[in-house]
Length: 103
Image (tube, rainbow, N blue to C red; front, side, top):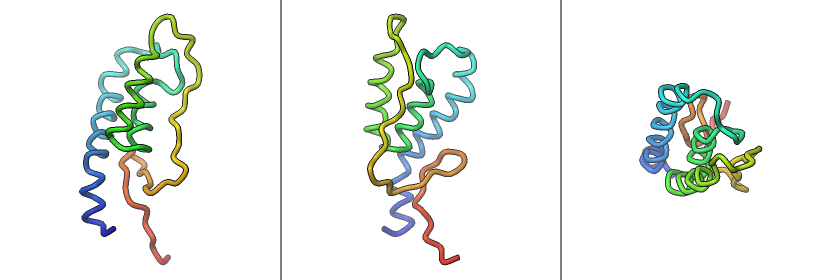
């Protein structure tokens, strides 16, 4: 797949990543450390969108949020990983096509 098409395909996913990064920088610190799960729900949502795309990532995040209530035991709940990854993640968190450089 050429780079322009890949960029267009990844645009919704990266828009979701940007929105989640803004939430984690601005709103999440106002709540403090109150999450019963590790990673926090916003970190889980970010990882799910990065790993699975916007639609399926949002569905996984919604499922996780439905388990987040005062009577939940909490615990470690990592994002399920795909068996084969097609993309890589930048240091900021954007999803990009892996570079296949010759050097």
